[in-house]
Image (cartoon, rainbow over all chains, first blue to last red; front, side, top):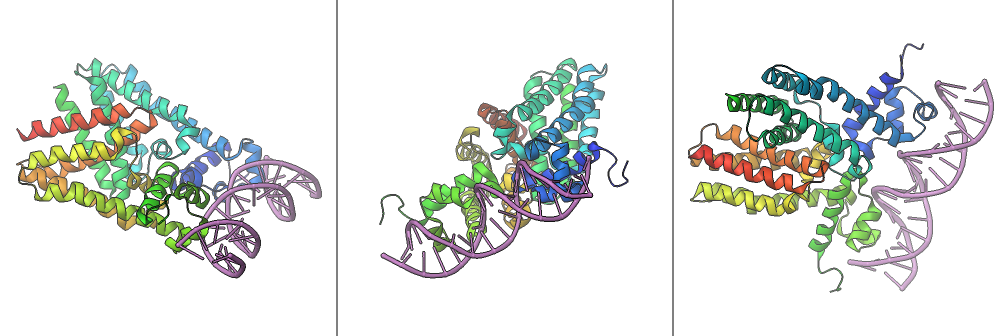
Length: 186
Length: 186
DNA sequence: GTCTATACAGCGATAGAC
DNA sequence: GTCTATCGCTGTATAGAC
């Protein structure tokens, strides 16, 4: 067990950050190799499908994280408002308080979308559905529409925060959306 | 005056669509040449700075369109609520009802941002400022925060609409944001 | 101004030695 | 499993004929 690289998941995490900062087209195999600490040959040993497989596995990993940390609690929690508050907290932490973008959102905005359309669609569909279910259980009218507003608001806040180099904008938006939602429940 | 290409602006418009659909890294000179109908050599005659200059001019063109069609009316209109309504209308038309993404937003989400940081920052800053000014004149409290919410909401709605391949979601979000804003003014 | 031909670097991917 | 060397190709950019 080498010191520099414990396991495949560690490599995948570093690969994810390369896709995050350079986009799919901009993430070269050289950069992926350097960041993961694996030679190109080794990369193809782990990911025979090459760059596309690496990106697909990164998306799958993100998806399962959100499923466990965000969607499932929204669906199963007894206390829906508390689960919604927890979602905002987990979201803020996941996106490093506005300093980290959403890879799903970034991939959606160029031709990369066509490659991973199913994964992107499922990610956003399930986020909206999980939040809408919690809002409905909390007694909110037009839960679906409100959920779309919040998920879109999160994506847009990430975009603005990065364009303006102002992570605080993201945190401010999250906190206001959360307040507005809870006010709508009261 | 050739029939296929009236002027430089026509070429720029086609170039813009290539950047929009492929992103900065994904927009190859071959694609830009094919879309504009100009050989690579001719492209470098129009744009000596190459791909970076093309993208910069596309962003400048977008910026001046928004300045004239959106920011200036928000600043100067007598009837602020009407100007805000007009902004939503112009926004919906510009983004083809949700079928066209925001190039500024797309460029903000990967390493391309660093190349055009000033243009991206200015675009979003001025959009937020113009909307906030109109909201303030219409008597709204926390106009800055509301303006950030709307501009972020627009960006996020574009992202979701494209990820879910559902342009109607964008139009729905616009219409609801507009209603909420006007309700907040009353 | 337009094009074709080309330069050279970097791309994703593979082979094969160790 | 790891690496280095190399493949074929495409990338951006330029030169030069017309």
